[in-house]
Image (cartoon, one colour):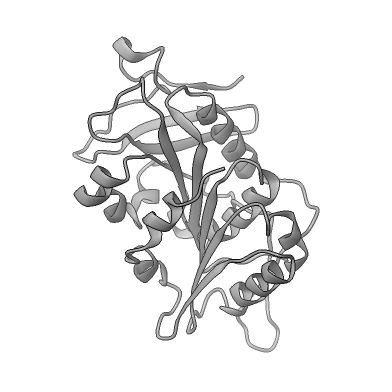
Length: 263
């Protein structure tokens, strides 16, 4: 059974139910429950939120280093962008940061160690079942879409590292939901590209000096998307290592680009 834990009694019928944050963060705390798992999340509502209006929804998927159950670590990257007064005023949206369990993974990817280089080797499947974390994430998305104040024509998703991989996977599994997406230092199997190439506009970011997830993963999927008829944006930072998210979240056109797309 899917449900949200209570937030404020006066708005219990209007909001996905939440528990107020225990610090000064504007992101409220919540948890999504399903038969698969419990998925903690943090949510930022627009200033002067009006439940009678409809707002765009942005989901941000964190990397493997922010996994856990504290419902805090996932806010480590990207939140400054969404907290900017200029962004909140001009691009009012509901922003959600779910947290993957410590032992989980957003995407169903196999990680091996390259016998020659010693670096991690990522093998992306084409038909593997979703992980428990992905199942819960999709359930959370579905529940959010049921809320009357969510603009179903403007639902966006993006993520970094493990979250970038999860972004590719969820738009493959739910290609009719997202109006646009961004992936930072992620990757996917090129055979999956045709499933979302023409359906979900993508902006892909990577660091050329990435020592964790080789930038070739992004380059190959971008090429595959183009070959399948898509028109992705691709930004390669020549001096960035794995933390290319620092530059990606500073891109002045990222939010305007997302909002320029509707379903």
